[in-house]
Length: 582
Ligand code: NOJ
Image 1 (tube, rainbow, N blue to C red):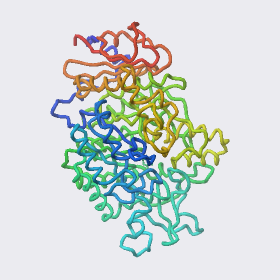
Image 2 (image 1 turned 30 degrees about the horizontal axis):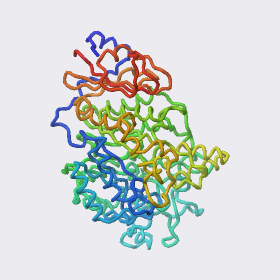
Image 3 (image 1 turned 90 degrees about the vertical axis):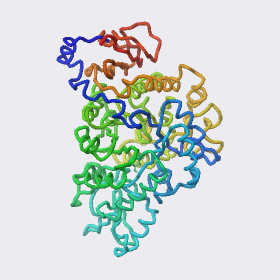
């Protein structure tokens, strides 16, 4: 695409390009660290690959599939928690921060996995769940024994209100009061999530230092980084007061009352100093409640992490109703604006993780595209944005196959604790059981947790036993073996995109410049590096989309569909152009 400076100013004035200086965020080769030049693959180990017939995935299963991960260009694996856990929240309830849950294997298996990964130039990234532990952690067992126990102050304890009710009316994220009563101690403890996940008291320096030590344990094992869970909740307000009731249960959602409380960054600077500051590793914080404008305080030179998962683009199609999630109308321009805001906030200082899926979200093909979309085309459309955007792409297991949401016939088929909370909430709010189930079908985290689809054999090749969660019935058409052999499959598309990222410096080092911000069908942007640029254009709609000449003037180097019509994108078509002559 050739854009003269006059045309460029005219396009800026017309709002066709965003005004951010395109040159500002170009990086020099040696400015970037290893984790900025690769992609990260997220594994939910329970659902990835089972080698024992237990029905639950394990670490050895991951070793068997390292080449699959490498084939799409990933140089790091984020393992969701593999520590000993009662599995109330599938590992996000940790009973010991420095060991491996027996259902996943042993520490020797972990070390073997790290060594096998290293041979392929892949590093492991651990999930640190430091806002809360399991109620089965020794620390909590001690803490609840008495008010004078040495660990009495390691969790957040309060007396009941004078009328015997919990200390405040806060509703936990999984539903119900955020307080549970311990008979043993005669007090309530706070839990932002399930009652089996008591919140740790970060005000207590002993707690913080015990957590830092746990993180250092994994650094000593050579891990390549950390994803840090639910980190925006670690700082609680100075005073605990009731919030305005926001539901039929008379409770008030805890997120709005405790997320991102001032003072949180002091804790996190200490955490960084004590644990991460000098390693060749990366950190990515899960930061629900942090907005793009907050990013400079969180990432970059003066920030606390290398990247944060900021959710404004994920939450758009899941906008919160007053009480709980319901699907709402949303526009592509809003999605693009959300992504551009994060990019702008980090363009000269900081870095973004690029992500459209994880273990808590519906599958991207259902989340970001209209019902009835061809899911294979949609999977390629999102892949093109994911791999050509500025930042580090995070691929969630199965996304590279185009795995989709599942709709189990009964609420009893769902395992996820939060889906059950959602269902109960819906009934409390007066919805019919069928309507409540419809919401679960769309929002359930189990959509992302059905077993990985490896083959068209029994249980999709995930296990020889009974899978802990049913396999999505579409596995005969969506599986790695089939897709590996088909050069037009979603998996092959990911492999091709991985190659493109390795070949084209623009995609790693280039600046990001949004194009066509107001267009409600096409997601388009340019990546400029030195005197070259690549332009991505993806039709997110189910109708053909006219493509402005300013985009298709370049040389077409990559496309998701066969289409000889240069000035119209087919439904869900993705293209990458090389800008020529600049
Ligand atoms: C965020 C994790 O991603 C989610 O899966 C978990 O349930 C909560 N944090 C609680 O740890």
